[in-house]
Image 1 (cartoon, each protein chain N blue to C red):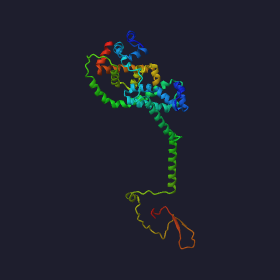
Image 2: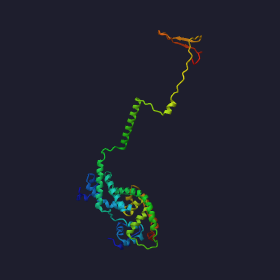
Image 3: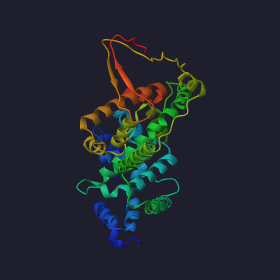
Image 4: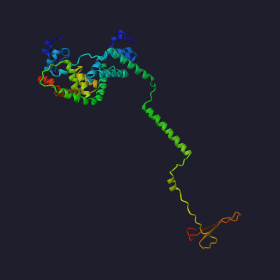
Length: 199
Length: 171
């Protein structure tokens, strides 16, 4: 079914209603609307474009499969984020053990940089630094860190997504920042120096 | 659009609102400065950007929709009344009980002697007993015995029973 102008203006809940009535076009509209949100979160958590794309597609397939279970009392994005985080965390857990050996080699390479070297933070480098140092985080810590720092979600919203208490989210966030700082100091001393100077 | 001057003047540690973050995420020149004010902004500069999957949104949506169609096709091929795990267990238990019952009934009606190994059969088989001819009593005389003579039916055979405590046990 071709999406009509009317369906473009529908909000998420209304689109879900349309899909439940058998409107495939409404689902296509929903996928199109949420792709960058879902892919963005997957990419930041997983750190690899191709994997993030596969995981995002899996999320939408799960969405289609479980749409009947969605309760319109709750925000659609919260429900969607929960699905994304569950799938991404599962993927990270299965991948983490395989990557450990590779990461130890990367560490040896990066610590050879002169800590006294003057650096200017370049945005394009921040991403690679983040991907390198965030590997020390558990999948859940990383997901919380990404949702808080990059997706700008509040602790209360993250708690709803993960189905835990707000204090748990804050604890994870605190520990994540601490671990990241330690990693930054160890592997990227040139950035850590900037960080510590400002403290 | 926020200016760099405004950003640098108003940035406070731990207090970056959405507009400040928006500027930070699009201005390389302010990133160094922001980090010197609040190091936690280092990784926050990564957010906010709309990311697009490799191949573009149209290709991505097309892939998702074709996967959904495959899923629907598979679902329509699956049996409509799927049997639950409990039902499967109940069916299995019924079949097992039926087979066991039928086997027992058959064995009851057609008893089968088990074929034991030859050496066991030999060990278990009763050895042939040697029969000894007992002493034949033709005449008997005693004061303590009770003699019962069975009534004769006309033949030559005469049955006589003797009850006497003093008789030897092997007689």
